[in-house]
Amino acid sequence: MRQPYLVSSSLLVGITLALGCGGKTEEQDDNSLGDGIESLSGFDTDDESDSSSNETGLKLDTVSDESEGTAESGDTTEEGCKKVDLLFVIDNSGSMADEQINLVNSFPSFIDEIQTQLEGTDGYHIGVITSDAYIFNQGCTQEGAMVTATGGANSSQSVCGPYAEGHRYMTEADDLDQKFACAGQVGTGGDGNERPMQTMMAALSPSMNGAGGCNEGFLRDDALLVIVIITDEEDDHEIDGCAQLPQPGSNGEPGGWFAGVVAAKAGQEKNIVVLSLVGPPGPDPVACPALDKCSGGIQGAEVANRIVSFTSMFTHGIVGRVCEASYAGFFAEAVGIIDSACDDFDPIG
Image 1 (spheres, rainbow, N blue to C red):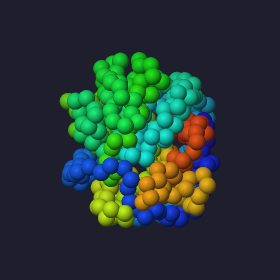
Image 2 (cartoon, rainbow, N blue to C red):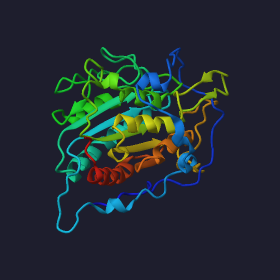
Image 3 (tube, one colour):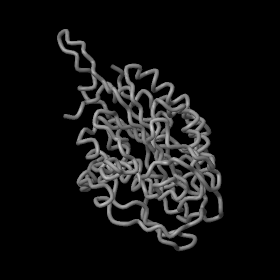
Image 4 (cartoon, one colour):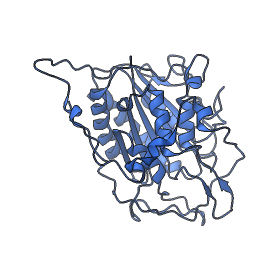
């Protein structure tokens, strides 16, 4: 069994707040947040885990003795995961055009390598959601509903689904490169008050995945869950420093988000992989400068300490720079994380 990678090699480990003045350059709308995470997801998202020492930093030691394998005295059976559910949470606000293209270009080699490394695995579910309620969708436009059609500036301007098996998510029956290129380029017409963690929680909720739900059948008990988050801004509660507009961000706190995702997998934390492409902690003015929102600039990224904190709570969680010219290196490392998590997979029930 492969040893899990610890931390993305592209990430600087010190955490330093490098926020801009807090404004948004993208168009604002009047979307309300609704009720709290509990009502959104149906999960118990008590924030007790916020007291963890990982709250303000990356997990630097995610390897336990158990990761050496389970073969004992002649028992060489390795079950591993047999199915994989991939959820892409893509920021669709005004500064994300280049990052979406980068993601779409990096996807083919990423999924090909996953399928190569996890050769004993079949049954892939791949869903795309945005950082707010996506008004261009077909049928389901609420937060957390998976993308089947795109619209607005810098989007693919296409109808992408229903997909080959009739769902709102892709499977191995689809031409994944072509379909992800359609759904993954969601455009830049979204709300400037990004809520990626809130839409993630909604996408994984029992009501969304149950019978009649928009994402019916996506989340499976017997599948490894891989969450990919890509955003150039923090998901936080702040006041827009330029226009003095409220920016509530997602409901809840990192510990509650962690608890909710783990609850979605029946408490099996090691059955989850979190890959976050965000503004990295630590000063990095060349590779990932601060997002200059007040002067109308759209380059760079806001440091996402809260999303980093959430990611670092997972045994199989890594962070990369959203500003990189290519995500190929990050995803190459992520395949090793996914491989290790698949080896560690503990079936529910």
